[in-house]
Amino acid sequence: MPKAVMAVQVIPHGGKLYDIVDQAIAAIARSGLPYEVTPFETVVEGEREELLAVARAAHEACFQAGAKSVLTIIKLAERPDEDLTVAKILARYRPGPQEAAE
Image (cartoon, rainbow, N blue to C red; front, side):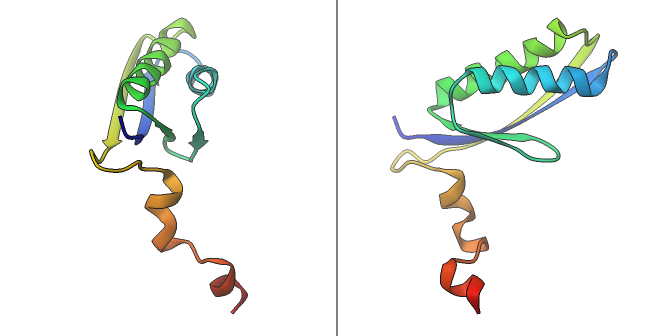
């Protein structure tokens, strides 16, 4: 199965917001999948079922860290014919070595 890219954002309510989000990110890190934390969400690469399991783990980590409720937003990009990666998606927006030198 081709690799996909998922953005996951947890929005906990109740408890210490940053401590809870840190625990969600730690759950993502424990997956062993490549990920990148951004200001509003975390982007993860992997197979669809792996990614959905990671989103669930991040969601559940919020409750374990003391959240009273959690809203989790998932964006999943997938193509049946090729692997997707963050680098592949962003390549057209990031200058290459030659362009950056100019």
